[in-house]
Structures are given as structure tokens and as C-alpha cells.
Image (tube, rainbow, N blue to C red; front, side, top):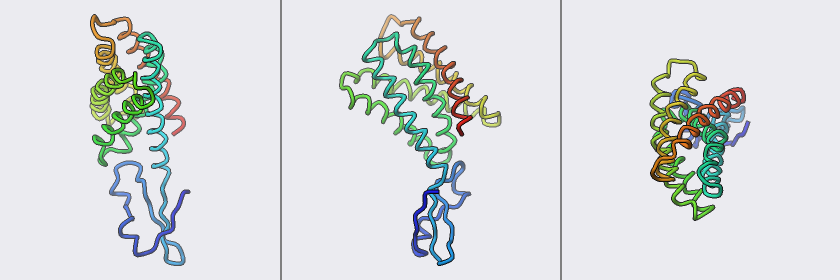
Length: 208
């Protein structure tokens, strides 16, 4: 347990009850024998940090690989990286639901594109295409994930991945590579993202 000792006077400012968070309450306090309180960072927050890091690393790697190797590599990174991103997004959806989901997800998507551009300025067009495509894909993914909220989590993740993958696989190549549309890339990306998302859902849900 990661903990910080705080005084009783600070308790009212830092105490957050379980009811104030829909999912993974990030802060809990416990009273000790000497009257102080312990602020527990909690497993939920560490888990969120893990998924944020995974999301950003994956999207940056995906963007830069397209810059370095061209359109066809996007099918490979769709399986490895984008499937991972779509699955990680669903875990963050649960954690942030009712607690700034929209603006936090917007910042996360924009951060991935910004980091890609900072690391390689030639990645600007790809990073912009990624930003717009993931904004659209995230919306589709979130709608499906929310619509299936009464279903088992494994089903929700994979069905929402299908929706997000369909949107991302069309929008990203259209914006990044232009017209005429590269249908082999679009179809290949879609299949790879759905398959990759399925594999990552098995790995990450087992980890959780």
C-alpha cells in the first residue's frame, strides 16, 4: 500500500468516500491509533496509471512506425498497438465513468498525437490523422461499450472494439494516405485490430 500520513485538519479536504466514485475510488483514508489518518493511493489509481502508460506508448509507437515504414506496416501495428489501445480505453472508461470521462479521454488522445509529433516532427500529418481518427473511433467504442453495459465485460470489450476498429480503420487511412482509398489497408487494419483487441483483452483481463 502506498500511503501518506496526514493530520486530522487535512482530512476534510482529502477524504473521498466510496460513493463519490463509480469505479476504482482512487483515494481512501484510514484512522490510526494516534489520531492521524493514512491516505491510501489505492490499487485503482495504480491500475489507471498502467493503462494510461500503455495507451500512450502504443499510440506513439503506432504513429511513428507508419512514418518510418509506410502504409502497409499499419496493418501490423493495428494488431499489436491499436488493438491494445482500444482494449485499454475500455478499462479507462470504467475507471473514469462519472468522473470526467469525456475530457480525460480527450486529453489522453491528444497527448498521444502530441508526443508523436514531439518525438518526430515529420509525424505531424500522421499524428493529426491519428488524433481525428481516434476521436471518432473512441466515440464509437464508447457508445457500444455503454450500450452493452449489462453484458459481461469480456463481451463488452470485444464488441466495442469492433465498432472502434471499423471507424478507425476507415478514417485513419483516408486522412493519412488520401485518395484513392487503400482498401487492402482498410480491410487489413480492421481485421488486425479486432483480432489484436481480442488477444489483448485476454491478456489484460487476466492481469486485472
